[in-house]
Image (cartoon, rainbow, N blue to C red):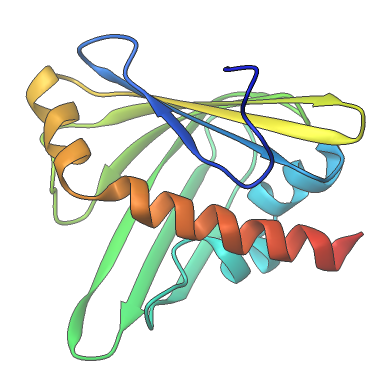
Length: 164
């Protein structure tokens, strides 16, 4: 993470041909950020809910081997769904899970690793997504996903402010 990074700015890097790393600092303790990414009632409030999208399904079975399922709905467009399996969970520190979309917009499955660290009451969230190929990673980069993630994280920041 760059020393110049400040709260509210998404940093996106590509450390290898198959990875995207997204980093964001939130002005909230790690326990609140962890709750916001693992409790369905909070996830529904921020993940992918912009530009008229709503989360119509948010199921999280937070245990190793447990599954999660998200479906987003928007007027005049088909629903978009995705899900995966939790591979590793260290409460308030690290979650590793698979990721696959119902209508694949990149080939194969990805592995997501989210790490939370807290310093001075602020939490840094680093999410690394490992794709099956460089082509899959490049397709995701070209999709504008950074704008969607940035918008979702802005909304997450607002949700976290409301929880403090």
